[in-house]
Structures are given as structure tokens and as C-alpha cells.
Amino acid sequence: MKLAICNELFEPLDWETTCQRVAGYGYAGIEIAPYTMGAEPTRVPMDMRKEWSRIAADQGLEIVGLHWLLAKTAGYHLTSPDRGVREKTTDYLKGLVELTADLGGGVMVFGSPGQRSFGPDQNAESANECAMEVLRNLVPVLETQRVVLALEPLSPAETNFWNTAKEVSSLLDGLDSPWVQLHLDVKAMASEQKAVADIIRSSAERLVHFHANDPNRLGPGMGLVDYRDIVQALRDVNYEGWLSVEVFDFSPGYDLIAEQSINYLRRQLDVS
Image (cartoon, rainbow, N blue to C red; front, side, top):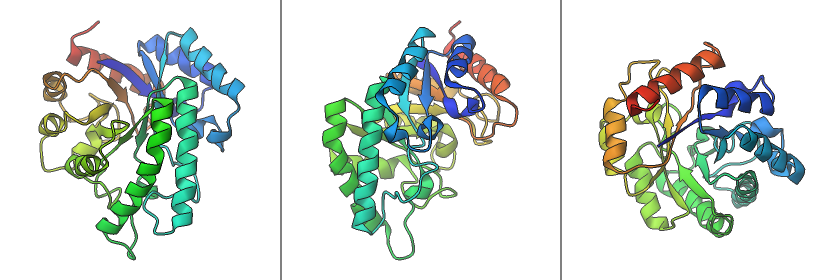
């Protein structure tokens, strides 16, 4: 398992300084929120994409991919009953797939609770059909660009759609594509009835990416969640992907969060 961190924590810093900091803490990878690349990330010119890749590589960092795919956007929605909105959303996500590939990344995490919740004019079945339409139309470009879209279950406090790993896994069984798989997040899993370690073990077949954090919205080891059972479960299912630190409360500052998170994860993994 390799350790990464999400870049929006460092948003006050420019990209080069961010990469220098992240490498200095000892992370091997960095994960990007598209909005940190500008208001229209799918229109970022190729020379900027190459420059971001070069800067990361010069610091010995791998760009993991993208997350917060629809954050700080307008007019996009995964489960909208409006076909035009779904088509627009599909086109935007295709652009993000190409951006991910151009940056050298291999995974895109779909969380974006506000852009997937369904309204009172829909039910879960109808929302699922709309989402499946978008996903099926994305699969060809995902395959061409060799990028995996990882769907993230989130708590009922954040969204009414895809609240458990079991729900997402059921959808993935229906889609049946190796290019759309499962992402797990500790903060989100804490809202489920099952223990986090049990969710990991029951989701092993689909699991491709993992966010390390705590229900208190800070980093791993900065709250009440003990990662010993979590790390053991990941080892038990032979997970060899990224443990990517994603936080939501930036108030302690990026230095403290980044350093405490990686030091804690290293202790759990028993690596120097």
C-alpha cells in the first residue's frame, strides 16, 4: 500500500510548492480536486497538464488521479431526470477522464453528494437508472484512456443516493465493467451499521481506491477511529492500492494534518 494525500488541503499554495511539501512529508502520491486547476478544468491546456505532471514527477510524486469531480460546478448532475443535464454531465466527466490520463493518473473518485442526490420527483430506482445511463456512456472513454472510475458510498447525512458499499457493489454487478469500481472512505463507512473492517472484507472484489480520514473530518489518527483493524482487513484482502488522506476540516493547518496523518499511517503499516 502506498500513501498519498489530496491537494485541496494545500490550496493556498501553488502547485510546485504543494508538491514540494507533499514529497517532503514522505508521501508517494498526490490526488487532485479538479477545481484547484481552475474554474474550467476540462479546458486546461495541454502544456499546463504536462507541466503539472513534470513538477510532480520532479518531486518523486505520482499523480494518483482526481476526486471531488463535480465540486464547485454548476449544471451537472448524475441522477437528473433531465436527459439534457445527464448528457452534459457525461460530456464533462469524459473531459475529466482525459484530464486524468493526461496528468498520468489512473483513478477518478466519484463522491460529489450534491450532484447525485435525487429529488422528491424521483425514487431510488429511477435515480439508479439515470446514473447507470451516464456510467454506461462513460465506459468506452474510461477504457480508451485506461482510467478507472471509483464510486464512493457516502453517509445519509450527505446524500440519499449510494449510502452503503453494498448498494454500490450491487450497481457495479449490473454494470459489469472493470473500468467502474468501488472506492471506500473511512469517514463515510463509519455511518454504516457494519464495522469498517467487515465492509472492506465484503467489498474486496470491487475495491480499487481508499481514503483515509476520520469521522471528525480530520486525518487518520486525529480522531477516535483505530486503524489497526482497518489496515489488517486491507492486508487480508490483498489491497495494494493507495491510502490517500482526504480531510474536510483544514483548521489545524496543512503541515500538522499532513505530518500527523502520514506518521500515524506509517506506524499502522509498520514502515519507516
